[in-house]
Length: 613
Image (tube, rainbow, N blue to C red; front, side):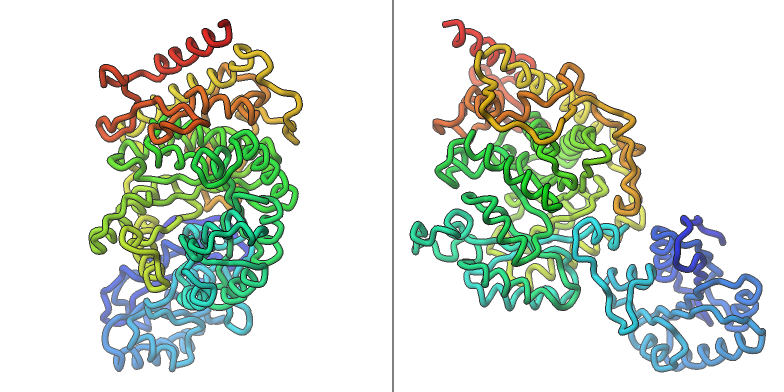
């Protein structure tokens, strides 16, 4: 039975697989062949329960590069079958003998290993990374795997499987260091995100301003570059996970420079509108922090460090309507591109706000994806990162495991490059190394099953209708923001630093169809997803990347969330409700759903009146 042919690669082109002897178990060998196909091999399955002699005859006639033997029955019988296969290959004159590999249960695999016949033996206990590395010819002469130490290279190496990332930070540096060693040795996590405590995020370079009562609150109390170096050194074992850390809320560029030299920060995460008076995580005004954030994006771009702008989910966590989250996602990517970012990590947080259904979630995420990836060109790559919503995890640990699995399954429909695993324990306590390892194994099991083949939930009419609605509403809101300088004299202040690169917001089809080559996990983004057109916006980003305009947008309520009520830097007048699984704006008086066009019209009308007064 012939299977699909993969693309031509430098490593062997043909793998043949077969179950030997009386073994009729074929799931393992077929899954292995399917994985090989996804990497680029041609594969052929000979069938179940083939005799060693028949296998040898076929091998001589067809000359595969690798012959994969599967057997899951009796270890003693396995030894006799291996001896017969070796003799048959010799007697039939199958020269050169193909590279031989074996897969079976652990007891049978021990026999195969002891025979010395096979180049590689799999017992079913291996990590998927080891199998992929073998197929790609990655192991060096010592049998160790050369793990790439940069994000894009690691994504390409791991494809078609996404990288797994998890947040980690315990109340002491030593416990965190020991935990990182344990996690790295488990070889189930590709990226460890160090979670510093709030004192470190805000006052790392100002210890005199630290609150001793908050020591270790919310993360690891890193207090010096040496602390970060110790944590990085702990990760140089196992599968050598990439290391990264959230940006600080103060001295952002200085903090970024330190992370680059100490932990080789895999990518930075910088909010556009937050980490200031808006979320009360710092004393800076929105315009000031946004200007500094954009400067930090530019610094990381100049130093070829990928950038994530963790923006959209901050709005959803505060019950903003879905359209605001979609617009925030686009603004985040646009501002990153305008600051010269070449590799952009787009995070898609599912299950937020609480009560969002899977269909409405996918519709919202597809709207974000389409708008963000409309910016893709030869100088701007987008890496998709999905995650479950932190508040979606119940305190009951068994139910939380179900939530982790379900969210991972749904989010795999975005064909992510990175899966940000949220520990199932988060509804009860901060994740320990044991929790992280178990959570990653749950996610890996789901991902493995998804990549074997599952229905495409994004094709649902309900999902597509919600996506189309949100893209239309996002266009209304974006055009309103872009038009603010025409309404408010002096809003575009020339003193605000400009963008280092020209940023077109039009839909340039010829640029956006750029392939991601091997690093895109085999996905033709332009071919799979129609790209968004934002007609009505100018060719240059203009107002959409101006900190003063965006701060004004928040102050007047074009970008708003119910949780911002009473915040002097925001409006906070918007009211939202969950309707049929989607977060929508409702009229504060009638309680009925308020169309985005009507909401925007009311705000623009109020702005006109205030300007003319």
